Length: 140
Image 1 (cartoon, helix red, strand yellow):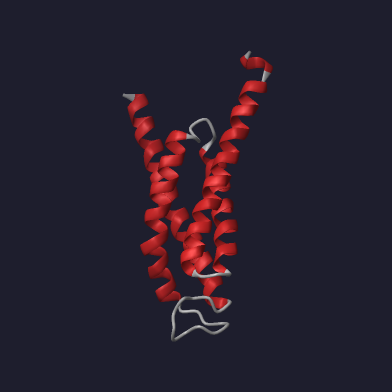
Image 2 (cartoon, helix red, strand yellow; image 1 turned 90 degrees about the vertical axis):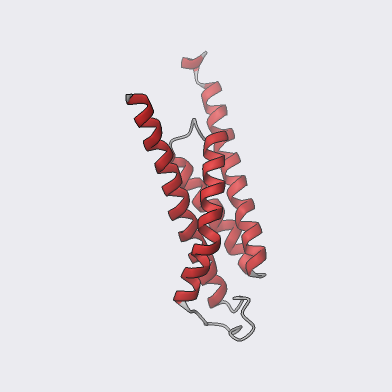
């Protein structure tokens, strides 16, 4: 019973991290895009425009589902041997890096580059943890 409740707690933590992380990343990326004039709105395409309520709604609509799906899948398949804190940090930074670069183009490009940044950061952390695990003399 202890192991199953621990697994349930871990799964809840992963889903919560994907939800909050996806929303935060999307909000930051969309805010950056709005401020530099790449909001994608035909009526508000000037530098310095920012509507927090529409940005929060778009972050909820796009960031949360992507965050939950991508983070849950990558954690279950690739990042299981990495601590949750390390997985969150890497995926957050990778998503922001890719998304902010993509926001220089347009919101759809920011979604694609943010997802790619997330994938590359997750792959890097997973590969690094595998190498670290195999190079450790205690595991041989």
